[in-house]
Length: 353
Image 1: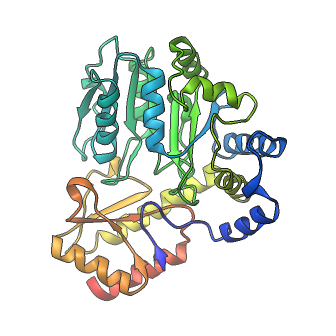
Image 2 (image 1 turned 90 degrees about the vertical axis):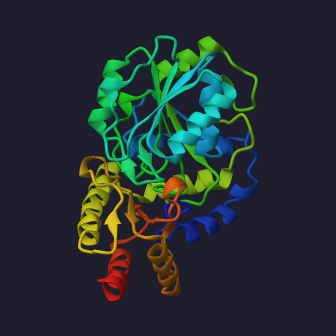
Image 3 (image 1 turned 45 degrees about the vertical axis):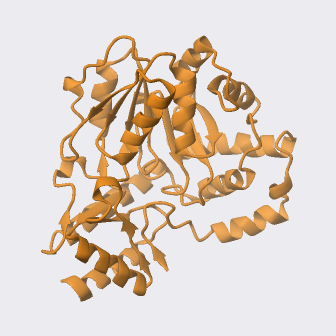
């Protein structure tokens, strides 16, 4: 089965070997307070920074999912409110979740075919955290580096947090332009679900220590204190951390991966533009995602495409949120090789050209 679902998506085939090695090395029953895990954690942190171009003074943390990161950040970095900028379901969910913790949280919704309207944002001085999704998995849009830079320059005194779940480990993100970046590993990392990676700037940690929130098992200050010794507040997903270590060791630097995905995304967009029965959901090329391609058609055709593809051992992604019934999505993640996309193209040319 060729898996183009945008998460959980295809894992790197080497994971099979990594799993056997993890068993043979005793990773699955290693004490998480022991030296073996500490050395593993230290090695992963070093590799993440080196391979993903993360600033050396940023702190790396492990959580269970990007959704848990939403919770950690709202609990530990806000006493009053956050501000959420979104154009799709996952950014909106983060906003809605924040409101449950801090009812004063505010949001600004913009259209999927427009760039984030930085100049229009009315963010009050008592806002403690600005939140947005760099790559909106639900509709296949992205916020580019220049927009993030403009946001950073306009609101320099406010912490900025970025959900990069469908782009971290796939795109060469300019992490220095925001304080917090996080992602689950079941997408561009090419690993099984159950682990998230979060990178935090020194300014973020300073703010967390000033607020000093310690009410939850994954409050940011205790997480920071534990990671000073490369440990976690809880028993972590040691197996996935080991898989992350091995994956990073075997993958090229992020700059090369970014270029490959960028070229392949352009090729896929060009390919699908030739079909009259489908159209690209995101019409504005400037805001199209490089890692999630979303195609729109009538509901009957969308259902037919997904069923027919599955019959030919091709798993396409369902639509999501408001676009659940009239779109399908195709992941452009590093673990999926070029020949698999050629097989996907042959399928569409045979049945829908």
